[in-house]
Image (cartoon, rainbow, N blue to C red):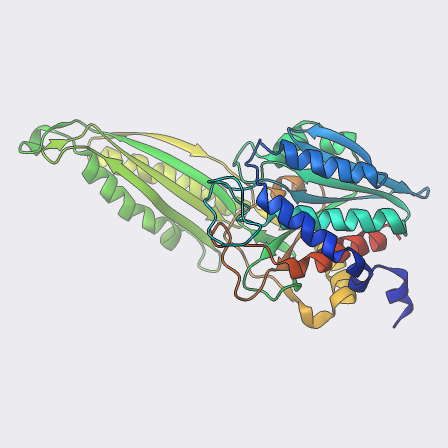
Length: 393
């Protein structure tokens, strides 16, 4: 055992909290609350933090909770975030702690994320082996889309009211061993934009198509044309996705409708490519419609930005992770086409978003059979505690 091991938190230091963390996580799992409804979860979190001596501020950007603990005289400050909301999914895990609220469940592991940060908070409060301020951010409404909980907290003065030098967060990772940690500098998770397109044609009788402008034909041609946006406009060494998720038109077999509607999901890992995708999709849509004599309305909504991890903070977190669990259990995360509103925080502060292994056989995120791996709780909590101690050494 090295001096460094003795100076900072080890996973074994949280062994006495393991049963309590499992109990907390399973309670949260059984009592899920959707985005903007996290009142009971926020109350439970705030009460625990207050009992451990944190200065707690409630209702930041909605049901957000911010807790601060200062030790020593250093002005340095670290921020760590966990999300709290659940999803509108009917649970099918069969667990004895399954959701007690029909149609709502923690299918993304936010119950685990919240518990991990609570575990770190409790340990840091009892050991106080740091010099500076730790700011714990319990965020609502990560799953909501824009305006998300992160943006609402920022708009409510999060960084002005609670100054921090850097911010960190994590998400569980199905398909990686329980307790493993994955990190990546630079872009890691994709931006997520949505285009809703209404094609306006001229309806009429199905037997007289020459007297109409068929929006169904326009929409079908547009779906095919959109497949060229990535294939013929994006550098092959880059990554982007354009997926037509819905297409709706008409009600009767003998009627050519007036309208056809499409919805498109657009993902990318670069701000410039994100702009190019919007430009090409918009121009191509207008051109295809014009070619058939139709018109279009395009509602192009920018969702969560790209998660871009700062190199300095990511490499620091990697070093801490390797100290904590060994380099064999720490790896570089692949690019993830899913999105995450932690990206909003990273647009304002340097920091890093980590992934915590949830088991090789874990159900995928947003599945009715998903469950957070309790075996990862102490590793995640120890990581946040040690990261805080090392950052505020």
